[in-house]
Image 1 (cartoon, rainbow, N blue to C red):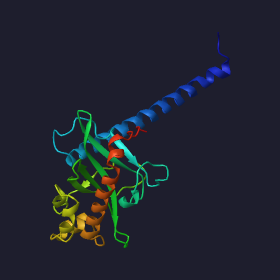
Image 2 (image 1 turned 180 degrees about the vertical axis):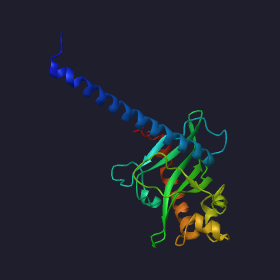
Image 3 (image 1 turned 60 degrees about the vertical axis):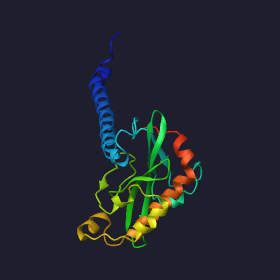
Image 4 (image 1 turned 120 degrees about the vertical axis):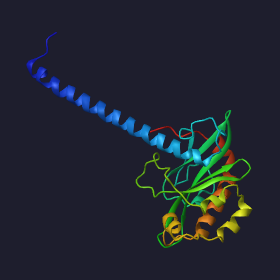
Length: 215
């Protein structure tokens, strides 16, 4: 069967479109792979080495900012301003810890994004400030800001947080890097406390709920 001359002229156009579409999807897949690896690398600091054997970034639970249809309760305690992910660490299929997101603000347009890992006994593994998030991407967002003061939360439980909230950040450079001028240590501590209350309220759902599908 021979193609008509006018159709033959369109063949290069069809081929060019096919190539462009293929490059687009390849680029999207490559970007997603880079974002996942970025988060995968940074998430390791939230859980003890050799305590988990799953892929942290693909075993994530979506916490929506609008919780009308969500099985989760008390999501307001997290103060989220956008959809965020909680990350589960498993060993031999059993959840051993969950990293819960939260957002702290003090009423002066000062906001910090937090990620707090909690084990099955309610102890904090690590609490970190995450760099300001832009856009609606769920992946490629776990970029942590180093802070000696935040390290005081490691190993703490709910009853320990009050004492940490009154401890001061002594280094001016760390204060500026960590929170800026308007966020106070007490505001951050209060949000971490609320995140633990949320965790205790939703521990079973966070452990058993379905993992988010990669987009």
